[in-house]
Amino acid sequence: MSRAEQLRCFDVVQCAAELRLNVNVFTGGEQLRGVELLAAAFPALPISLDHLGVLPTTRCFVDSWGRPRQEDEPIPPEAYARILALSRHPRVYVKVSGEYAVSRMPWPLRRRAPHGRRGVPRVWPRA
Image (cartoon, rainbow, N blue to C red; front, top):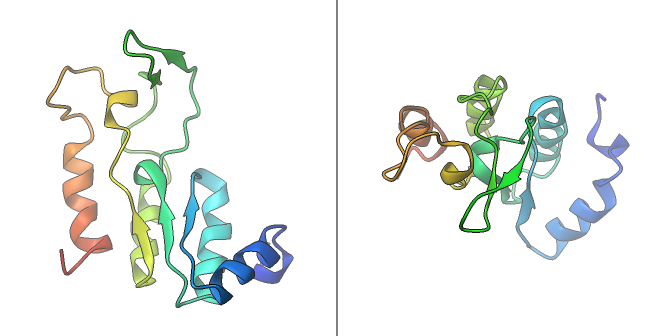
């Protein structure tokens, strides 16, 4: 895919941009190319990636609190460099959430912490 206009979601995202809405995306891996294309096509559109851009690829189960878990998910994700590269688009944001779903450690959840600290200054340089 080389053009944002070729994406199936293009018309919806274009409408969101016209209405000045935020587009929230739960994606990762190869699908990040679509985010890159949309961020370039709509530079004023805020785009938020859920869960530090981790799209689970491993078996999911429900923990004792009723939350989804993917303890075998690789952290950082294989697409981490691409997620960080999205910081060149000033309106792309990465939500740091869902740590409980991939952590093998009890609170405080430190498994993803080094990757979040490395990414936050690049994604939010003014934070």
